[in-house]
Each structure stands twice: as C-alpha cells, then as structure tokens.
Amino acid sequence: MSNKVFDFINLHNGEEEQKKVLENIKSNISFRGSNLWILACAIVIASVGLNVNSTAVIIGAMLISPLMSPIVGAGFALAIYDFELLKKSGKNLLIATIVSLVVASIYFFISPFKETQSELLARTSPNIYDVLIAFFGGLVGVIALTRVEKGNPIPGVAIATALMPPLCTAGYGLAIGNFSYFFGAFYLYSINCFFICISTFLIVKYLKYEPVRSLNPKFEKQIRYGITSLILIMIIPSFYLAYNLLNEKKYAQKVEQFISNEFTNNGYTIIYKNTKFNSNPKKIEVAFLTKKFNAEEIKVLNQKLVQYDISNTKLEIKQDVKDLKSEILDELNNQNKNLSEKDILINNLQNELGEYKFDNSDIQKELKILFPELKNVSFGRHSINQNTDSAKVLTVVLYQIDNKKENVDTEKIRNWLNQKLKTTNVKLIKQE
Image (cartoon, rainbow, N blue to C red; front, side, top):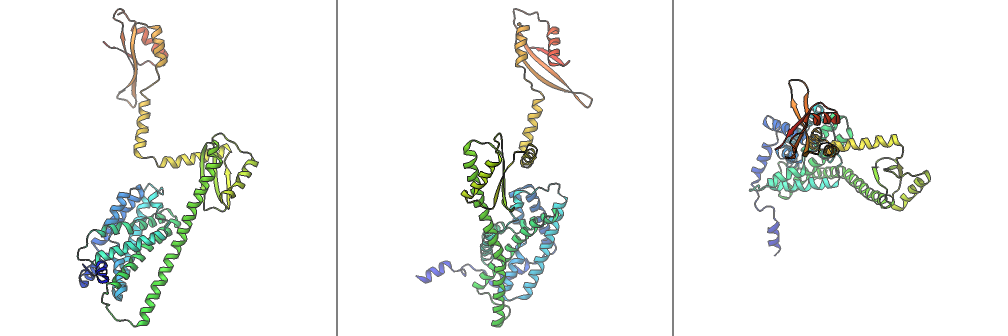
C-alpha cells in the first residue's frame, strides 16, 4: 500500500533525461542577441501596462519575458555544485536586471504620465505572501521543466511569480526620484528571484541530479548555512511588512466603525475623509456638509477614540472654509485622474449638446397667448459652418397653424422672438 502511495506522488514518474534538462537550462541562460532584444521589448510592454494600469498588457509582458532562465540556472548550479554555471547564471541575471532597470527608467522618464497607478503601487510593498507565491511558483516551474511532457504550467508560473512588473516599478521609482518605491519594488524582485532559485535547488536535490564535482562535507555544510542565512535575511522583512499591512487593515476597520457610530448614524453628512496611518501620531481628518463642532465636542470625540481601541491618533475636524476648500479640491482632482476616456467623452458630448438645447417652456406659453393661431411649436439650434473661424448658430422654430386661420404674421413673430431670445438669427419653418 505504501509503495502505491509513493508511486502516486513520485516525481521521478514522467521525468525527462537529466542530461537533456541541463542542456536546455544552459542554452537559455545567456542574454545576448535575440534574448536581450526580447527582454528590452518585454520591459517596454510591461512599463506601458503599468503606466496605463492595464493588467492584460502586464500579463502579456510577463509571458514574453526570458528573465526566469538564469534564476533557474542558478538553482540548478547550486544543487549540482556547478560553480561555472552559477557564475554564468549570476552574470547574465545581473546584465538582465541592469538592462531592465535602464529601459524602464528611460521609458518612465520620457512618459508624460507620471501618476502612480494601482498596478505600480501594488509592487512597492512586498510581504510574506509574495514569498509564498515565489516559492511555490518556482516549485511548479522547475517540476514542469524536468518533465518529458512540459504541459502548460510554465506560462502560469511566469504570471504568478511576476519578475517583470517589480523591475519596471523599480525603474519608475528611479525615474521620478522616489527611492521608497525603488527599494520596495526591487525587494519584491529580489524575493521572487531568490525563492525561485531556492525552490529549484530543493527539487533538483530531491530528484538526485548528479553533482558536477564532489565536495567535502565541511564545504557542503557551509553552503547549507549560507542558504539558510539568506532565506532568513529575505523572509524577516517580508514578515514585518505583512504585520504592518495587517495592522493597517485592522486600524482602518476600527476607524470606519468609529466614523459610522459617531457621525454617519447621527445623520452628519461627511464630505471629506482621510486617514494618515504612517504619521506620528496617526490622524483621522473629516469635514462635514453643515455640522459644526466646538472645541469641547472635538475633545470629547478624541477621548472616545480609546473606546474603539484606536490609540496614538488625533481626530481633526476641518471647519475652516479656506482649508476645507483646498482639501476638497485636492480630493476632486484625485478623483478626476481616475476618469475613464468614456466618462470624458460623455461629458464632452453633454456639453456640446447643451449648446444646442435651451429651456423654451416659458416662451411656448407666451407664444400661445400672443399668437393663438400657432400650434405644435418646437425649438432648436442649428450650427452652420462658414468660411471663417466661427460658425453661425440659427435658432430654428418649427410650427403648424390652424387651417381655419391661414394668415399668420411671421415677421411679427420673428421680431418678437429676436427680442425675447436676444438674437437676430431666428428662422421660422412652417410644417404641413
């Protein structure tokens, strides 16, 4: 029974010949010629995707990228003690990294769009979950590479482990001079590289690939200690960042509960809200449509924060008109940046339509009284392009008359409409 279970999970089933796997790995490591061009193009595509916040474009760039090959090569080299292969893999990975950073930085430097989109921001704060994705993605990748039938895991691994977007984000950080973004994104890239390498090392060891050279036990022990130390160095900051992320989410939930209980449920309309988690003390900024608070009420509200387990936080209620106006304008500007092209097109069409429409209900009522022979009157504006810089806009009036009263003084009606509408471009059209 135990043998059957072992056979069921045995990775040696369907394994490709080890010599052929190593040849494939070595042939794809070098970043010269076509590989370098493909890498540069993939970096530009990924940068454009991050710049315009397009997930589909970013995924396409990840599928094109050849970045994973030298990382897998380094994992193989460590496992079989092939230090020439390790040196070659490291050198090519360094070349690929530098080229990627340079291309991404140049793109973002010359790009007119410098806004930090959500796809960019998502790559600046790695945590332990990114470690897990890189490690298990690397496991899937190397298992697939060692199979006779490669199947379809490789494209999925390229997307999941996401080597390209963090490098582009690091280039974005350099281009705009934001080193917080650069170091955050480059740390994520380093996590992905390192744990793909480690997962490759473990699988190659498990599959018992033949070492290139024999090492004495002391040196093997040093390698194991070195790898363990690097794992700790890479993991500890990610745990800290994950802990910070968890605390920030918990804090946001408490703040929402406080605002809901103390303001929203009491019928106060909030027109501005902002939470500053990283300041010391933390800040909750709110502004209201009509409600005004005196100093004593604000003091009591600050004291109530403790009841919601919100510590080291100051509540600021913005009531100064000038201050409030600037905050609201900033908020509106931020929202306007997120308008889609469709929203802008609709807005432009509505403005254009407004030029040719006007409220004529009062004029129609007066016309009925002054000229009772008219019926079914409708108004509109029509633009006539001329051979000048401007266009002539006619006010067109469509009307019908009672058949029993055929004599209509159109000149009198036109003069009255010209006076009423303050224009000289009224055209009357009789409908049968």
